[in-house]
Length: 98
Image (cartoon, rainbow, N blue to C red):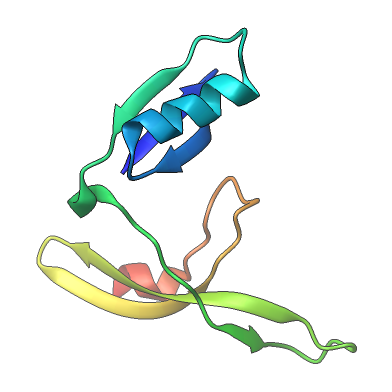
């Protein structure tokens, strides 16, 4: 996979480097474009289920991800809300002590 970056932001991506670069040049002809190759094993793509939570009317759907936390040989799996607008993620205190 190739990605084209302008001002450190992805502006085009795809499997063909020339096509990705051409798209970026067309969109940003006056900007410096950085082309990077991302190895297949480094790619991450996923779809998450949306579930209804709480007693709010109308119902609010929230994306949930199953996350495995591993630390010093201990591991736990929990379902967590996905919030792309968050600066931090809160994990219940009980997870840290178990």
